[in-house]
Image (tube, rainbow, N blue to C red; front, side, top):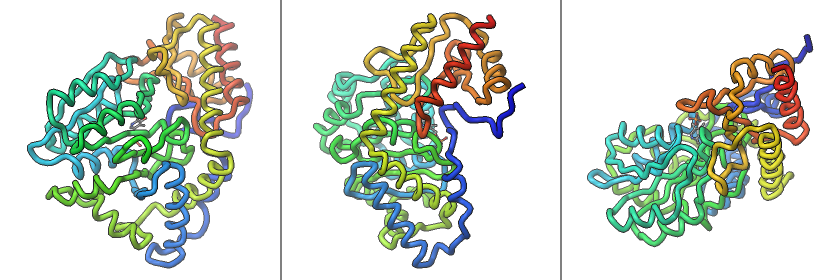
Length: 363
Ligand SMILES: *Cc1c(COP(=O)(O)O)cnc(C)c1O
């Protein structure tokens, strides 16, 4: 039986993290009310703003991305107003659920899983009803659909008082996103997807407009309140103890990402997507997501050959040293996902696909 020094993660989060990045976390701790920490915060802030293509600000949250879902709706949707959620997959549906759990009035544009939202759908909904915010998922990780965020942003921008909230948890740093140009009021993300960091820290680029809205809303909570985060950010700090080890890792990873180049990183993801599609179709599998909207960071394979996904995953762990996805939620088994995000290289992708070929050859 082959030996591997560890099981490599080929999951759509958490993803495989390079050893150098893991080791960046082992630097000695510093107090967060020190000038050393302010330097770290400011350094990282500058790099994050470049990565989000924003001139405003990027909050660093000691949480996973889901916390910022709460922050967005609590700070951006007023009592008696409504939020419009674009739903059609596990994550977009959970965000709508979280808005309701925070007492917000939610309407959804529900599409079938595997389908994208179009600007026309959003224009129709906004013509019929006033909304405080439109909440969209950039890259729906369960179905492998990327929504046309730029075009939807143009529609939302025609409604002066409607903010545009975007979950780019599995899109950010793997596929194009331009916060200021696309009229996005919050773009929120997690560390453990295409950012290729360990889990436990989340980031949000937030507009001035959203901060102005927040100032008109009482009871925004505290931990995910953007006005509280803003007060600290102006001092290069955080309101409560930050995840310092993860910030060391993020600082180093941002250097590597900016050295690769953001556009080059997107292009690498696109090339891996194309190779994955070609592989899947050549072996008689389907592609679950609607053509034209297939994600650059994760391919959801339609298991049209009816392979035993559990057996495939067990084979891959044993023979190839990879932890594999088995599909998500309602479409588990009927699909499985091939993530090509983060620091995955074409060579590693080829190794994974070759491993699945070896499994298929034994069927
Ligand atoms: C993983 C994921 C989330 C949840 O993020 P956490 O960091 O686990 O809270 C939300 N949205 C999308 C699109 C995701 O892929």
